Image 1 (cartoon, rainbow, N blue to C red):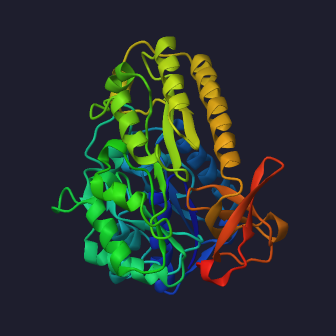
Image 2 (cartoon, one colour):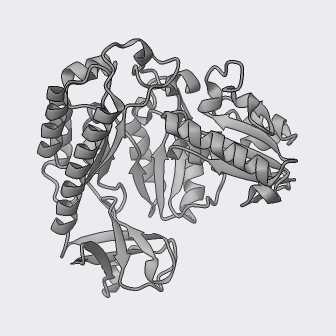
Amino acid sequence: MRVYLRTFGCRANHYDSETARAMIESSGHVCVGRAEDADVAVFNSCAVTAEAEANLRKAVRRAAREQPALRSVIMGCASGLPDGEGPRSLRALPTVEQLIAGADMPALAEALSLPASSSVARATLQLTTRALLRIQDGCDEHCTFCATTLARGENRSRAADELVAEATRLAEIHPEIVLTGVHIGSYGRDTGSSLGELLARLVREVPLVRFRLSSLEATEIDDRLVDLLTGDATRVAPYLHAPLQSGSDGVLKRMGRYWYTAEGYARAVERLAGAQSTFGLGADLIAGFPGELEADHQRTLALVERLPFTYLHVFPFSLRPGTAAERLPARVSPETADHRARELRALAATKAADYCASRAGGSADVIVVGGAGTAREGITEDYLSVALSDPTLGRGVRFSARLSWNAGRLTAIRNSVAPADVS
């Protein structure tokens, strides 16, 4: 059987696709890169925005045109939501035979007629240079704009012993492991543990590899995580992606993000990143949420200006069916939301450029992640994309470098002193 596997959305989805690929290949089948070469297609879907779902629908229709005999399965978040009836149903898309909620691997194995035992397979070699390790699934919060809780259910933490064993296997090949999930800050709440406890154990028991945390709420960073994130940068990347969504307390309340205020977020971020000369800090922001006034937008701009962000992900508000935001009044026009998003992105670009320039002349722990020849790139510990002075370095090579600022971009120059090399 030839399977075309297409992934949309976040790192957690990409991890699930790597697990699906391992399950398929361990059963003696192959994954192919084009729908026209496949017997079956598996689409791992995202539901975070209307655009993400629209992209899924386009991809399914395109694959059906390329291979009319295709049998398609949709898994992930979009297929975990109520599907309804009629032409908007995912089941109504051409070639789609089954919908599988979330990352239900036993259900996917059954849909693909694979042995039930194959659903426990985990990828020891992932297609990406930096490996993903999903530590939990689900979310216990109920943000009014988010459909993920509806699709993924409550927080469920994986066993620490299982995660250490999987990380040990991944570290044999991958130079960095990214801890991911739907809400990783809730790891361990259902088992009497914590994210800080897990990360400390991984650092202690899985040597050499660099660990990185994916999206994490700023107010969930305890003392242990502060120590890990500001300690040995060769083991835990000095990096945090902390969703902010808005700099207005009134908007945060309407979003259902009751556990922090704008000032509380700022204090948490400044405690962690404020005193560090090398620290990557990112955030998600939603522009044009229902009820957002120009004054709210200005508060968000002021907070972004104040904090040491090195990049931002900015999204105009996207209404998701079934969420509480459907019932909120005072909708913001798409034109206004787009304008506010552009203002935030422009400010983010300025801050990103300033931070990159400040890193010139400094050192970095670089991993070669992609490209070819002169286009090959690296990722630093603080999540900067850098050009390489030596284009012959192979994908996955990890090395100590000095950073140079040329033509508006950082270039990593490999240090010649052997003891500094971390590859």
